[in-house]
Image 1 (cartoon, rainbow, N blue to C red):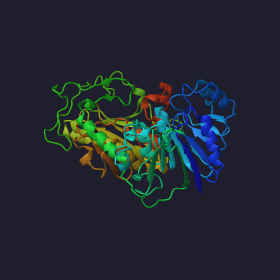
Image 2: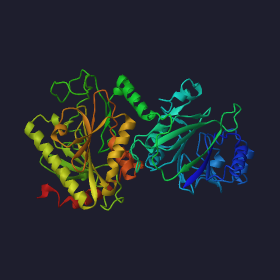
Image 3: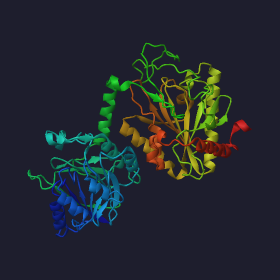
Image 4: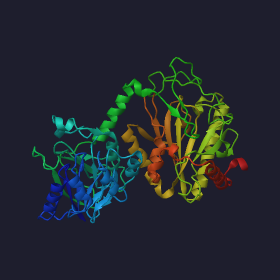
Amino acid sequence: MTSKILVFGSPALDLRNALAKADQINSSAAGPFDALFLLGQVFRSDTSDELIELVLSKKLTPSLPTYFYSSKYIPPQVKKAIASNGQLSENLICLQSSGTIVTKKGAKISAISSYASSFELEKLKVQNDVDVLITDHFPLHIDLLSDSAKGKEAILSTKKDMKIGEVATILQPRYHFSPGPVFWEREPFKNEGFLNNAPAGERYTRFISIAPFANSEKQKWFYAFNITVPFQPTDPPANTTPNPYIEGSKIRAAEARNDPSSQADEEEDLIWGTGIKRKNEDDNQERQFKRKEKPKRGQNQPRPTRQPVDPSTCFFCLANPQLAQHFIVSIGEDSYVTTAKGPLPKSNSNSLDCPAHVIIIPLSHGPTISSIEDEESRIKTRKEMTKYKERISEMLAKHGYSAIALEISRYNGIHFHVQIIPVPSDKLDKVKPEFEKASQINGYKLEEREDSSEIADAEEDFFKVYLPGGKVLYILLSNDMRFDLQFGRKVLANVLGFPDRFDWKKCVQTEQEEVNDAERFKTLFSEFDFTLE
């Protein structure tokens, strides 16, 4: 089916005439249209009381469904009126800071404001098959690789937003509209696959900036187009360019490597929620854990050091008297297992009746497995942690879940550990594409390898995702690399459909809930727990 969409530039101070013009176009030979989208500011601080009253009294009602998003200013009276469902009249609807609608003909259209919260941004990122994206700012890097933008100061100087760029990279809309000072139709650019049901390299985005409604410069202020759904792969449009967002992520990564201020490495305890941050100390300070003095791939600069953390104050160590023992579900000879504080899944979100988000922690205090000096202890620790991972995987498989294990190994870390998060088997095929997509956005080089001791105990720093079937997704963490410690959790939050739970600190439970979940996991795991054999 084909949807007919109409888009207007910012109608600020002229909403009445904009809607009248829309009605005229809708009733012309070009219409009727399925929807009208108003870009930019619909209201301003100097919007007249008369116009606000017309809107609130429902006397200003367009003839076709008309949508706008919350911008920098919404009059208090209007904000109150849209608080419940965003509807001002039968055909005038505010999508708040973000929202998604589907037209009668099936076109899926998402809108996002740069004023949207982190939760709204993450929630929008999990939308599938978005045909049209509407935003209030240009996405960062949209002018890269574009010949049509060269020499156009109005385009080059327009404010560009990184958050909107991230959303656009993930959603890969077929059309992306944003208000601008002038009309600009960028060359189409190629997306890199990873989208559900879209073959790699066959989905293209057209970015279009629309000038303000009825502007004095006579710049084009509206755009009408047809879009056919569902999406079908097409031949490359004329003048197609590579993806500007991917190119921009490479530039940002290079800038971060060359910026000393971005190399400060902070780590926060991810399990116990102490809120204590341990920052790097002077590079001349003696390292607690020594390593072999041989050059490593990606380690051309001196490694920053951190102030040593004693086992008695480490919240991963059983020697710590403040250890919250109610999280512990199994203790082996060389490692132990705990449930996670602030788990990603909710207790009631799966058939397990508990989050089943657990952490495998070595008893030896050290930032990596290879930092354990005694070779026999190092081998035994890795072997037992692997056995725990396999048994937990077997337990989850019995209940229809796959175990996704996340591992960060850094010599500048505090206490090595492996997190396991259950993913329903019917969502397993989304895990690898989501990590590939997120790695591109962040400028990380993601490799796929076979699971082996070569990377399990390597002395280089790495981030690793264990997938079922013996495959591993691997990112080398070089000295000059800024890596998001919550990266794995954020990706899996999107896979699981819990974008609002990407931050563990917002998922903390009561102690009784933690106790209940730990006891439930112990019950589920009892027949697989080798320490009970």
